[in-house]
Image 1 (cartoon, helix red, strand yellow):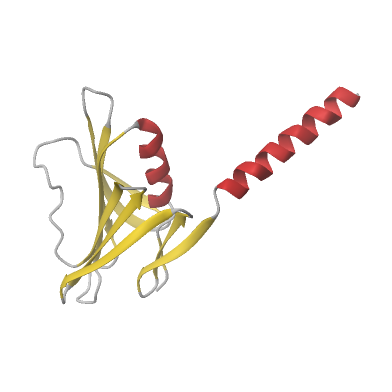
Image 2: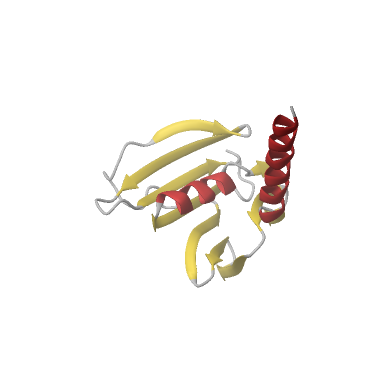
Length: 150
C-alpha cells in the first residue's frame, strides 16, 4: 500500500514538473488570432509590406516555425510535393501537407482559412523545414493551439 501511494505521489510530482517546464504564453498574431508558445521560444515579427506580417519562431538559433499572416499566401510552397489533407483545428478549416525526408526529418505546411470575406487577415500560413520528429511534434502542438475569436 505504501509503495502504491509513493508511486502515485511520484507520478503526480513528475506531471507537475513537466507542466512547469512547459509554461506557455499566448501570442497575438492579429486581432483575435492567437497561438500558444512555450516559454523560451524567441519570436521575430517582420512586416515587409503593409498587407502581411511574418513571424519567425526560434529555439536557440534554430528556426522552428515561420508564419505568414495575410490574404495571399503561396500554398503549398512545393507544388506536387505531397497530398494536401483537409481538417479542422479549433473550428478553423485547415489544409496541411507533410514532407518526410530520407534522413528522418519532417517538413510541414499548414494553411488556416480564417475567413472568406474581404477582411484581414484571411489566411495564416505556417511552415517548418527539416525538424526531427520530437521538434516536429512540439511545433505541431503549437499549431493545434491556434484560436480565432470573431
